[in-house]
Length: 190
Ligand SMILES: C[S@@+](CC[C@H](N)C(=O)[O-])C[C@H]1O[C@@H](n2cnc3c(N)ncnc32)[C@H](O)[C@@H]1O
Image (cartoon, rainbow, N blue to C red; front, top):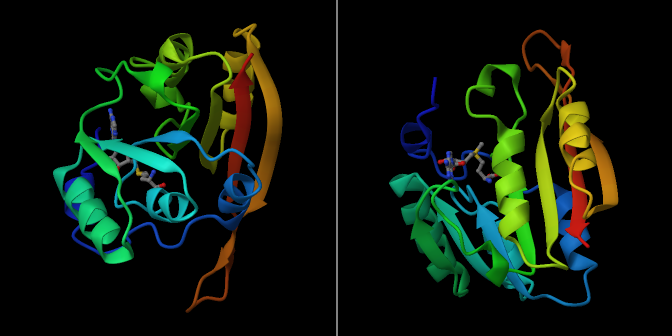
């Protein structure tokens, strides 16, 4: 079932702070070109990346998310081009040096009717050579392995970085440790 982001985005900064390791990766890049944030939500990553000097275009299907992102861009004094559009109809990927996919594709078995791997391959095919991709998601049930398999089928994909981040949290009342992990892979189209 599709998740209703419009309702959760009534809460400001619903997804909290950006993942520091993702921000660090972008901070280390010498050339800060054009970046497409797909499924940008409220701008958790788009805003800090624009503040770093990336020329960010943000697309998302949630009107509430896009509205929040626009407001946040104004508050932060950055320009971000926004589009209320889904990833599957967008096709101007060749215009971007960086293609950022944080928590849009999850490579879950339940999504097999509309497989994320096929959607990622379409973006990869339409991207220009040299484009750098970052694909990240909360990791469980071998999702990282599925991404690995998808990338293995793309002869032009060159893996630059794979990171696993412990995002486990301790429940306030019970004190129980809830294990969780975030994974991201960075690859380029050679
Ligand atoms: C889990 S949220 C992640 C938001 C943001 N990337 C972040 O990490 O804070 C997934 C986002 O993808 C958007 N989304 C869902 N389906 C989409 C689609 N087909 N095309 C573009 N965005 C989509 C949702 O509206 C939501 O904002």
